[in-house]
Image 1: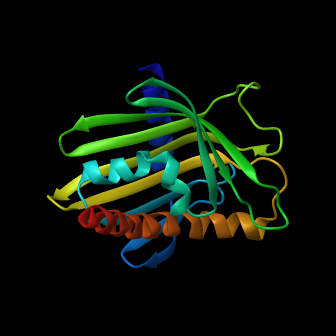
Image 2 (image 1 turned 135 degrees about the vertical axis):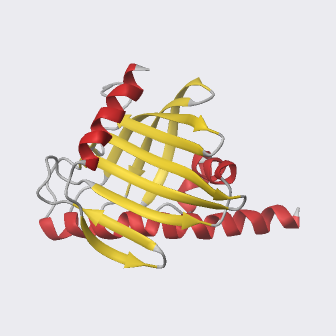
Length: 202
């Protein structure tokens, strides 16, 4: 509960930012704030043609997440604290000339109501778990809000507040801030269609 309250405070602070719209394409809108505290805050809004449960299932399928999540190499599950709370690492390929990053996270799936689910995560520090071959990025808060529009349509809002750590050129930071959340929602849509096709063939 303390973690959830802390994250909600972070996102209340994020929502007070004067966001700048940096991209609008395929029904996805990306907002950024380069002058805000922290290195890389972004917010993305889009609609996914699936119900909330299906979206959660695809995101939670960590063994196959690398097949669609942009630049993700793999996910390593360290511990399931319960059926909704997890300690895990996500390893990302970072474009040259920067070094690849690891996100060591504690994440929770929080069902607000029948029509709304939040997926929240933040970085943890554990020298026994982190991989020394990667720079440890810091996620102060990550929140995916899923809100039901109708039976097979969901509004997704993805908010991120974090620091990539280590050296990274400004042009690359700006590219990630603008393009990565767009491609995440875009690729999630495609993955859901693919999963539906695979399941229909079984």
